[in-house]
Structures are given as structure tokens and as C-alpha cells.
Length: 232
Image (cartoon, rainbow, N blue to C red; front, top):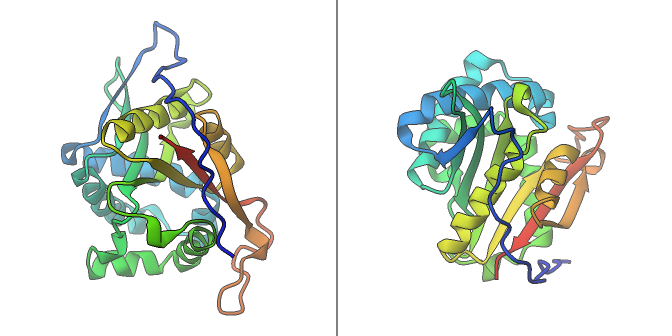
């Protein structure tokens, strides 16, 4: 049974950073010019920390070229952000988003082949969204989908993830989106979104997911949670 998205009203949180004054970070929209650098940090973080990616087990030499292609696609949509250390200018965080109606699988044969390497994760996220979202009522420009968020491990627990989320919320509100959703694959990311006013619409435990008779994530703790924020 499809469950409705929670429609409780909340005010848009102000964008802020918890970093000390002597170590500032700047938050700017992701552009195509930064796609390779952003793809590098994305690759480093997700191969090391993302539970589902670890289970699939790709190496960086395989992942990085596709990551760059993906980041270039995301950058063209102008709804994603990066965080830079103001002193070193290096990218230390990112949040990648797309309109919910924009399907990355339509980006050509190469992207389709890449996603096939992560078939179980893609299928699990599709199942989660099919269960807890009313797809027929979602039109272009109404729901923004956060696909990935990550922060360099040297800069964690400083409020950067929360600041990136709030950047997205502010922009989404200005552009007329009514909802922002995120598929959180770890408790840490779930807590970051909860701190920005998101609520859990549904969850699938890893060890309960079965595809083609195989429990690909059997033994993996936690699950994928669908987090929703109403911007109305």
C-alpha cells in the first residue's frame, strides 16, 4: 500500500555553518568546471563510507570515470552545491541533487551500464520510493531529489553536511519546489537530514531486501530510509 508523504508545515531553516571563524568554508553551486574535482572526492568518500557501495565492491579506477560523467550531468541541472575550504580552495563536501522526474538512466548506454553494476542498490531505492511516494502526483519542478551528500573525513562533525542541506532547501524553496526527498543509506546521513527538518516517510532494512531470490545485503546493518521535507 502506498503511504502518503507527510505534509506537515515547517519553516525553511536558515543556512549556517558551525565551523569556527578561523577555519571558514564557502558554499557555492556546483558547476561543470568543477566536475572532475568533485568526482574525485565523491569517489573517495563513497568507496570508503557508503554501505551499499562497499557491498558492491568497485575499485576507484573503475568508478571515477563514471563518477565524473555523473557529476557533469548533475552540474548541468544547477541544483547541487559544493563546500570549499576557504584557505586551501579544495572541495571538502558536496550535495548532488536532481529533479525527481529527471531519470539518470536516460543518459545513454554508458550510464546504463554503470548503474547495472549497482543493480541491487538501484532496485532497493526504487522499491522504497514506489512504496512511499505517490508517483502519479509528482510533476516536474515539484520535488527535488537529493542523491548523494558527503564530507571529507577531516572536516566532519563541523556542521558542513547540515549547511549543504540548508543550501539546497533554500534554493529549492526559491525555485518553487514543494518537497525535497533523500534516500539515506546510513544512520549518520539520516540524522543530518532530520536536523534540517526532514521526516522519515518509510524505510527498508538491508537484510529484508530480496531481488531475484537473492538477499544481496544480507548481514548489513541498517537500511535505506526515505526522508522528506515539506517546503510549503
